[in-house]
Image (cartoon, rainbow, N blue to C red):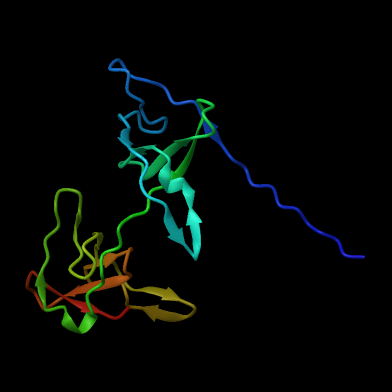
Length: 162
């Protein structure tokens, strides 16, 4: 006898609220949602994706969009597809002057996203061995997994393997 296991996915629907100007606002951050008309049918993995034809309300700050469910007045949320920038080859990245901005981050020369500044700290012992990875100040990009280490005592940084 074969036993089938059914999986249940939770679908949280939301009733969107309107502001004083009668525009929908994001339930998470409270900012006004941007209306986007439905577009052409997209082909995803060899199949027609009809959800692209439906209008939606986008929140750039939260990275989500809301689509109405069958004219019910309730909306389901989905993550926004971020446009992927082409990664620069690591051999083509010249030494670059990088400076922290007010938020402690700067633009990654490889992918263009915001990368974090990591301050140097004392040597730590990991599994009985000294870990020298974070001893010197460096920048770390969580999007393309790049690390930029300082060149001597300058403001120039070079891409580095971890």
